Image 1 (cartoon, rainbow, N blue to C red):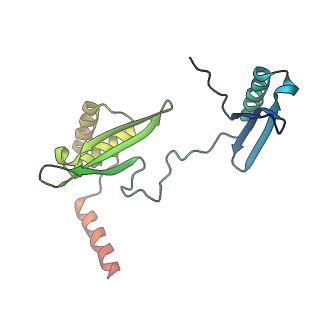
Image 2: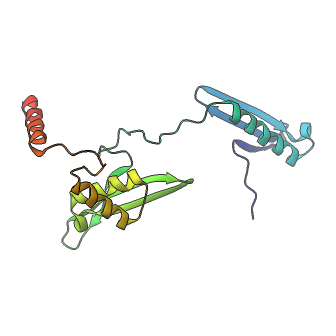
Image 3: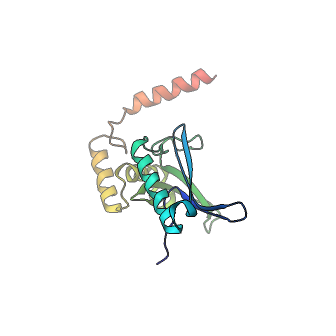
Length: 181
């Protein structure tokens, strides 16, 4: 099995410049630290790599955790739900665009996705299922269908929140339209 390079370290081999060793870099927020670990100073390639890895681990333990975009709404998001998007891929036999709602998230360092076809479920139900999949972080369709039925029976939205009465929703939409005019 091939060896993997240590996190935050890159090999530098430039003997003409006298730079042969490992370059360790770490960035956390506004803090950026970069250090060079020369093979000559540490007694060889493996020793300098170990020193770079140890220094990275030491700094990672003292600095705050890295910021991620997990749960942040992107400006490109058009669905209004983090991790849920409408995918349009090709056309069906009738020439209509094939659409599906896709829920995505990271789990144990791997990307997970599940898609729900708008033609199979209808646009509204596909969106609700994708929202549930994202919230529950599961690709098990049976669990999702059961949870959706349970939420509908309890009068809740796809996200499990109490659904607003239809009259109030219509009134709010009419008010919004009136403001635009």
